[in-house]
Image: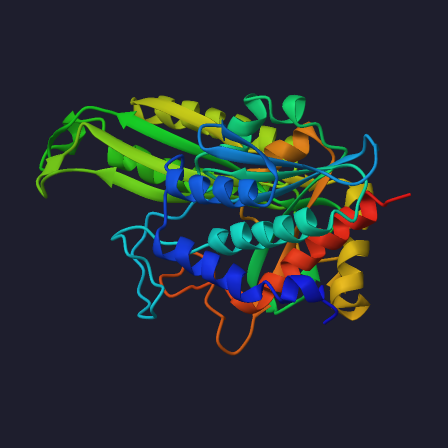
Length: 390
């Protein structure tokens, strides 16, 4: 693949950075070591550094040659997951219960590699904002950075993000215009009834019976309320009740993860969850307290920026390795908050080969270092393409 020779020469450095980060994973808003390393490297290459944005976020600002007011933002996430690694290679996590199981170590190393190249060559006219984001894994770090004035302080004509994808062939570029990843909401339903002896259920208002009906009714939302060509998921993932086999409990709790691709379906699902809770409560003579949290919106790519990203990727990986109709994914991503605030594009970089095939969030996952130079080259080409020198 026609990756940048100068970036290829930095491959060993990028691999070393990536594996060091893998050995020292940090969770949401705890990325102080990672952020300090990022800031130190950016400064060493003459890049202006701003720290503490969205708690632990870092932004590097690099001006090219010339006086153009054009700007571009490139984003990488930095946080790890609260899970135990089951690998035995030399760079495995050194911290129990924490692991880079989603490849954010690789995303960070890729953006650092691109920053180093662009700082050395400055073969562009305009300003690049290197955005290193905390807390993607459920913490809403993207939202935190936006609310902390990310785009007011560092305006971007377009913002771009990438994610590795072990289910796709190594070195392939995968994207689509419009919705590409789902919104992610949560619903916690606390049922309070009247407990009692299991031998006398007629003297109780059984919260378990209400919970079973609630579970069944929730499954009808996608099956009977969402159109068959629309995409949505309602998954009840927790059902907690009871302390003894001969006791009907006072309370039960159900928790659900809810996904949708459009704002309209998202609104529909929330409305139906509320209606079902009210109906089941009335039917069983119990109280249901619903805590419905809207977490991440859908990731919606802008058409113009999607074409821009694909054009840059095509020059690096070749037309035959660019897929503009990648399937939508029901997972979520808080880059969605940045795309709500600024035009942009989010794409997937395939990493699958004979040695790297575990899915993200798997205890044996490891980022495929063979794509580091590919990803950095795509970033470099995107900058030079969008901020050309006169």
